[in-house]
Length: 115
Image (cartoon, rainbow, N blue to C red; front, side, top):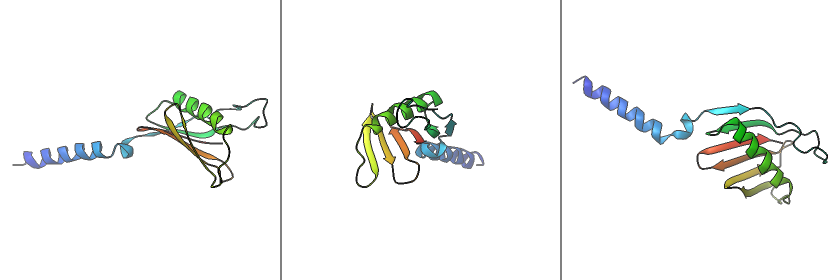
């Protein structure tokens, strides 16, 4: 009889872990991308607070740098929220605060950064 409650509790824990992958995913803080635009008007401005979920830091830094480079070529929308696709990543940039905040999503993978 005591075996059944333990088995039930273990199976419920497994189901809960599978149902909430976002809660189980660890957020990794990555090094900033230093001076990604030398020789431009953005020279000396870094991509900071890079956070990665389900990707390595090297991938997160590459996504932040290249997706942000595309963002600089787009017009600023009236609402201050920039939405676009970059190589399968869905990118949203909030340009309203003092520092622009971006998030790129591709399935369960996520990369955040600040400019």
